[in-house]
Length: 194
Image (tube, rainbow, N blue to C red; front, side):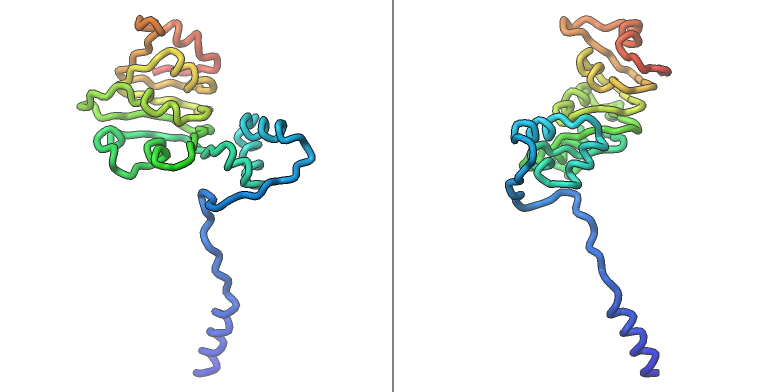
């Protein structure tokens, strides 16, 4: 019996425990000696050309995340909880408001939706957190019971293929309601609208 327990102990001692990946880094970053001028490195950090490129940058050096913190989200949705109690710890932009650094969200692919409860009077859910979105490359957008501006619509639907609106009003800068024809005209990749 002792020989089998010794072999089990030997097997357990060779096991390596790998800690889980950290989502955000903490700590300081060191000044880098770049082969390019600092102004070009700063421009690259502030203007990533694609989500894949940005992901490669932050995996290579945490300087890029520190200079321009963006979280990549493969789809994003908000339900009525964010409207009922702002003090709750929630996922998404409301949680990002509590962070010390101004973290932005980059929605890459998937769906983006805002679904407040029908009984809620808050119809500006999209407007309330749009400043937390760096770029929206969602394939589908779902809005329920919302009033959004034409500029917000253009920002959120630059790459969508389908839009699902339920009790949604899109307004011009002067407060007039934007007709459906203008909405369809403004979204170049649109294939379906509900």
